[in-house]
Length: 384
Ligand SMILES: NC(=O)NCCC(=O)O
Figure 1 (cartoon, rainbow, N blue to C red):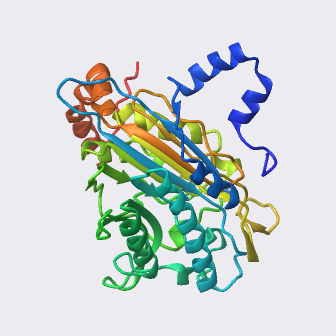
Figure 2 (cartoon, helix red, strand yellow):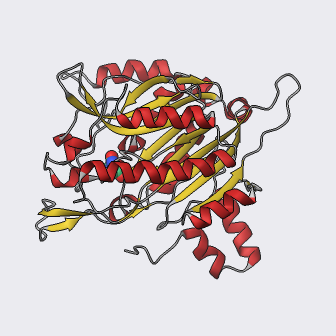
C-alpha cells in the first residue's frame, strides 16, 4: 500500500489523463465542478512557510427569490502529530496547540466561519496499544480543560466556531473517558458537546478498551453560521447515525476521523459523500496524516508479528454537497487546511428535487426496526 510517496488520486489523474478524459472522469467521480476559491496571497504564503497545504473551493446554489444565499466557509484541518509519541504528554499537547494555532490563523485569513480538527487531535492515536498510561493522561475536561480553553481563545479571536474532538475525562461522572467533540461558539462560549456513538472493534482500533459508546444521542448545534453536527470517525459506517443528525436538522455534518489505508481507504471517498446525498446536507470528512510509532510493541490479533506502528493515516480530507458534488481531497501525506464555501440553501433545493425526507418511509422502518431488535424476532424470509 502506498504511504507518503503517493500524493493523491487527484494528482495521479491529472498527471496521466488527457484533458478531455480528465473532464469526464471528474464529472463522474466528483460531480458538478466546485469553483476554486481565490484565497488571499498572505494566507497562501503563510501556509507555504508553515509547510501545510491550502486548498479552497466553493459550492454554489441557485438564486432564490425569497431567501438570501446562506454562505458559510468551513475549514477542515488534517495534520500529523509533530512530536514522537514517547515525548512527555504536556509537550505533545503544547506542540499540537501551536501547530493548530498556526493553521487556524490561516483559516481566519481565508474567512473561515467554522473550523473542525481531526479526531482526538491533541494526541497520538494510541488506542492500538491497549495500554492505559500515559495515553489516558491526554484526556481532558470538555467543559474547561486546557484544550477547550485554548479553543475558546481561538474562537473569540477569529470570530469562528471551533469543533474540537478530544479524549474527554468526565470528572462529574466517575472520571470516566469519552471520545467527544466540543463545540465552541464564535462568541467563545462552549455551546455543547457530542460523543462518538459507535466504537470500532476492527483491526488495531481497540477503542472500546478506553471508552464506551456515547450517551448524548444526536445533538445538533445552532450556530450563527448554520446548524452543525459531528459524527465521529467510525460513526460514518452507520447510515442511521448520519440520518439522526439530519433528522435533527443538521445542515453540515463533520466527520473527524483517524483511519488507515489498509483498512478503509477504498471506503473513504464513498461514505461521507453518500451521507451528504442521502441526507440533503453537507458533510466534511477529516482524517489525520502520517505514521505514528509507539514505544512498546503490540499485536493485532491476526497471527502476525508484534509491531510498533499503527499503519498509514492517509489524510485525504474533503467536503461533499447534497447534490453529489465534492471537493478534491487534500493530500494523503501532508498537513493541510481545506477551505470550502457552502451555500446552505442548496440543502433545501436538493431536498425539493429528490424528496428523500418525504419519501423516506421512516414510520415503516421505525415499526420494522422496533420488531427486529426484539429477542423474539424471526427474519421475514419467505420459503417455498
Ligand atoms: N477512529 C476510528 O473510529 N477508526 C476506525 C476505523 C475506521 O472507521 O475507518
